[in-house]
Length: 180
Image (cartoon, rainbow, N blue to C red; front, side):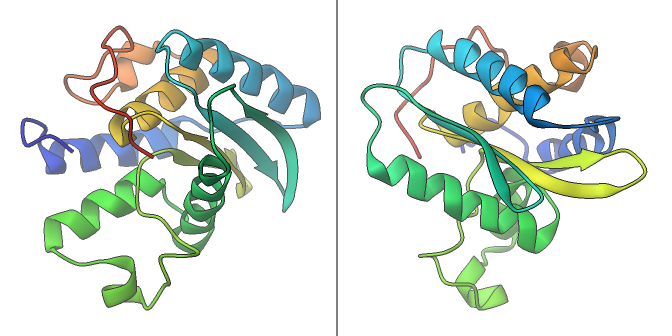
């Protein structure tokens, strides 16, 4: 993450995102629609990404753009595991660890081969039920992975994406570097 972004401001807003961006219901049709919207939004960046949506331990949507590598799918898996373990977005976990100088392995004894504290996975929550799955993207810089995903979820839920965007983040910004 660039030094120009305030970690505490991002963390505070991610808490709000996680509380606000919850679904009333979610099924295979919802996953397909949301995944397709994510694909369309990510395509605008011109960088290959992989996208997955899991519900109740089962994959409902997977798409890998031409130019992705098998490592993108592995990053999705590792980010998904992080969301399941902590019940938080993978970006929030990464920011918290970065702010304290800790790591998943050092603080939580979680192996990096199975967990990734990088932006790009978000808890799929049903209002009144809790977390039932994950939505993940891999291929953009981690703040953009998170930002694109949040914007698409917000728009799907009828929420103004700008109202929940991280400070200084805009979907019109080009990716700064390829990052998993």
